[in-house]
Image (cartoon, rainbow, N blue to C red):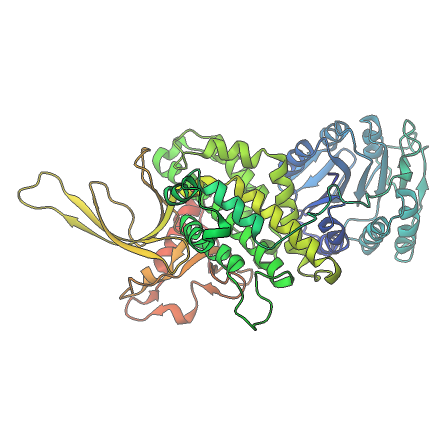
Length: 588
């Protein structure tokens, strides 16, 4: 499927407010066509050089259009985190065989356009208004609106130039002839490569790369995929599968086993998707409609958040284990730190896949055992799988399209494609059936006169699938786990370590109560940093959009301790941050 790559690059020193507006507007324009799978559009809101290089390499064989909107100069593009040599990016673009057009929106120069032509780019559209200028933003919006309705590149340029002329007096160029100018000369115009004179006739694709499923029943594909996938890892599901049990005959029993096999946060959202709506009730999550699309999107987000925090927890474990010998590469540090400093709006537009890639690069750069034994297979099947990337891109765009509303006439097709994408992602995550989420509530030291070695008795609550299923266990072992923590347990006895501490990325509110109720759990994921005061915000996994708490909110203040009841979680976050980034976070 053809891909459009949109890179919006702000400078932290000189942020450009209009870039955020341009980013939102173009996403809104393209999302309906993306959801029909005419093409994929991948937008990076704070593009760093590593992001651009990575995606140009990743999309090399399918890239059709590249937009760069941000600061620029004669031989550089100013990306998040520093300057990027324009010649290097031009070289990467020249390696994309299907590329039709590069759009440089802001401070474009003759030198840049010439470098792109020399690299083999068929057509360049350039603006030379000061970046952040209203004319450049209006031009970009109108250009993509015209492309979206089916105009060619040449026609779309002529349509959009009017919007720019209404904002400013512009010297517009068309065709070649700029090469003799000073390379620093600013350029506004459309410039076909002499070797590709008909490049301006190209239009966006108007047909789906693959047809939607002809016969579709909600949850059928999702449940079948989960059953086949988890049968390879989870003992109970494996037993049912081996007995020849089929969903048509033993659906209730099989679904219960599937939900119990999944980690609690993921299981709860799958349960919502597959649970039948009560008779006479309004359309629920198991019925085609906007509610189901939102729940599919939410399930995808929870899966990605869970994997991100498992890898982040692993990175912190390595740092604790190896100390100063474990280093975060300078090029990776700004990107990872930016993730942990995102505010609510930035997290809403988060590219989950790029954060997973970033954490993979962090782990790859340092030695150490990975708790997830299947990590190498995960890397190959998930992070390096083109079909998985396509499914992720579709579900990311589905989330963004929800802001603008889903077209009623396309609801059934969208639902089929969304379930197909989610099912495919789950088909690559079967390893999660080998692990169990648990909360460590209390640890007692057991040492008696007649015993040589002390034992540590842990009161552990194991969450089997949805948060309503749990076992309370007193677990005695010679090594201690971490108190008041959420851990990932390995079901098999194999491996050097039997748990991975996921705190403070995932916390259980009940462990912070003065008198914990051991029959209850309320799991929260780290959500974002408040832009107003830097407070840490966490989202309840059952209702991530509606139930978000501030760890420093007055209702959590413990007068007896003269601190927030979440003081420990906050202290852990600060310790992680300081050890990873070499300085304390800016918390109020």
